[in-house]
Image 1 (cartoon, each protein chain N blue to C red):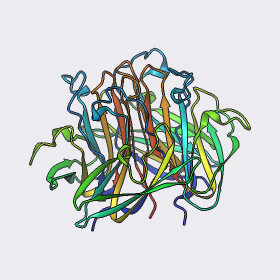
Image 2 (image 1 turned 45 degrees about the vertical axis):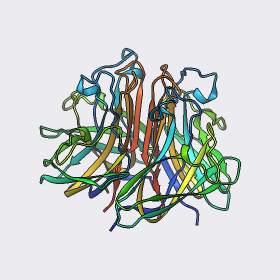
Image 3 (image 1 turned 60 degrees about the vertical axis):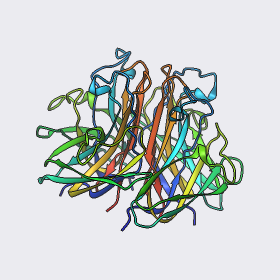
Amino acid sequence: MPIGHRYWAIPEGYIPAQSTNGDDPRFLSHETACLLNTGTQDAKVTITIYFTDREPAGPYHVTVPARRTVHLRFNDLKDPEPIPLDTPYASVIESSHPIVVQHTRLDTRQPALALLSTIAFNAD
Amino acid sequence: MPIGHRYWAIPEGYIPAQSTNGDDPRFLSHETACLLNTGTQDAKVTITIYFTDREPAGPYHVTVPARRTVHLRFNDLKDPEPIPLDTPYASVIESSHPIVVQHTRLDTRQPALALLSTIAFNAD
Amino acid sequence: MPIGHRYWAIPEGYIPAQSTNGDDPRFLSHETACLLNTGTQDAKVTITIYFTDREPAGPYHVTVPARRTVHLRFNDLKDPEPIPLDTPYASVIESSHPIVVQHTRLDTRQPALALLSTIAFNAD
Amino acid sequence: MPIGHRYWAIPEGYIPAQSTNGDDPRFLSHETACLLNTGTQDAKVTITIYFTDREPAGPYHVTVPARRTVHLRFNDLKDPEPIPLDTPYASVIESSHPIVVQHTRLDTRQPALALLSTIAFNAD
């Protein structure tokens, strides 16, 4: 049986607009949802983004293939709209099959990187 | 049904008194409770602050509107009293409706920022 | 009813032996267990420290008064023995009454501080 | 009764290829799974590594002796194959007896270290 849950939430979200060494994509300031699918069927994932002062954005669609992990950068979500930089947001993640979700930010605004991470909140 | 719980706790709390580039509010050392309300009704939130050597402060009142996130800086709590800087504290968060809570600190005391984050402890 | 649990564990533990600006206790590299007691009775807390290659140390005794938080630095544990620096360890925390526990490290070995934090694992 | 669970997952995984002061193993960029066995019997641990675009690697085998903690660096896993650097991965950890797992990264690519940590996701 695949490990995890189908509903997850990440209340913290903030993509810094600046970066040090941002030409190197590894050092671009970014936020990531690390999605792990240990099952034998592809997981169809839908993401909704919540804001402080406007209606939610989405749905965004991502597939996590069977027995794979996808480290999804929120920076890369473009459809139906990009996530604005320097703007607080939150996310809800729904999956067709159980997955496990961890949230990580790399912040390189100052000439020394900073990291945060936490297992997301599971809401099943 | 809205995602989350009505009772949350964050044992860690500490707002550094110094900042690098603190004139820019983005780089002011701060602590945040990221509150996500995925429901269709506004969440009335009450915060109590615990200290090491005095009675708790509060209640502080915040509203998280329906389908919105509020990234609340503890630095901004003023009523009934501001939270002292450079002082260990903890917080308990009660909400009229289910919410999800994540705790984040940005520390810019030295000329390179540092971050920490964790999903808060849910106490329902 | 007080919030929390009586049994907690923190598998990560490591007090860096060096510090930048370590004469200022705020900037001394340290590890902390943030203990929150929301109840009306004092919590008697017992800590056991586990190592890689020797028998556990302890018990260490701490009281978290009613309606107070104690941000306990592992650096300050002296009885029955100090925790060695630059040495991996883990901790188990037992309390006479429910508490909430969060783990934080401040690392100032390099001239820019780093932070980590997570809610501890509750084992009730 | 030993504290913890037998099944854990860590969706985030990434070992930076560069380090500052990497000749000193303490400052080598690394990822760690901190494993705590509070029980009286050795825990036989099996780790499987998931990737974005290839089949999982493993199993890797580690023993956590009774009443000990092992802070296992993913960098040190060599058999059946090393984990590639600068490559997103995820891990699933199975144990013969209950353990507690915490995930930590030290990143020293820039001349100031960064840390992240979270209790892993328990999947029992």
